Amino acid sequence: MSTATAPSPISTTTVAAPGNPEAAHRLRLIAGYILATALIIGLLAYGFDYYTASAQDRPFMAKHALLKPSGRIGIKLGMLGVGMFLVIFLYPLRKRWAWLGRQGISRHWLDFHVLLGISAPFVIAMHSSFKFHGFAGIAFWIMLSVSISGIIGRYLYGQIPRRVNAAEFTRKELQELQEKMAQQLAQQNLLKHADVRSALRLPSQQTVDKLPIPVALVYMFVLDLARPFRIAGLRRRALTGAEIATTFGGLLRTRHRELERAIHVAREEAALSKRILFLSRSQQVFHLWHVVHKPFSYSFAILALIHIGVVLAMGYF
Image (cartoon, rainbow, N blue to C red; front, top):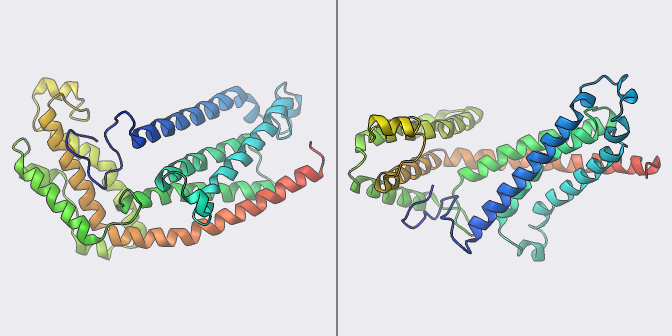
């Protein structure tokens, strides 16, 4: 999503260059996802026969001493899960702790907050050996709800354009950016204006304003999912038969620098237009999301502390 031109101030990615903090952050984030995925898949593969066995058969299996909640691996997974949640709760804490708030960039913290929020339910599920009963079971389902709502919240956060310092753009500023992108798109001669408008068409503002909030949220998501395929169709119109095949129908980038630059501007302009179109709805849902996400998070924290207290009281250590 980068070109030889200067990146858009609302772009979520920047050109990877030596010493670029955004590039370094992306590498750390990718490494984090790879590590979390490898850990989860590795443990699931190792314990698949145990996790899928009945509760009556598990005590007679060789892996029981390792994978049961109080087993050597099970208890370490519980500790890892607790550690992950301690780090997760640092993100809301940094908004109230001035020193912590000065460390790093808020958006970077949010990315790792989401990574841990996605990974933690899998770790806790394996710690419990997929038995969700009593206090621990209630805590798990609340945690899963927090995790899912966190993914939705991260998506909504990305729909509200911000500057590098996390301050939101005004609608007027966004419209000015959109006009500049539209002018750049009009100046190039590789993509026809009619083709761009047709491929990246959006509903009217009146239509969006009439949509119920849940429908508007789904509509935003569908438009984002459809955009890569619409861009592919736009790219195909500028390619020959052989190039269409080598780019998998326009889904992959070509070696034509000028064409890819025009495609990039078209993609960014379409994404920005969609954000402006749904801006008021995104802000409404995002504010409502905070009302739901925080109480669930605090409820889980309380139940998790009770569970840990009971485990310590029963002498597991």
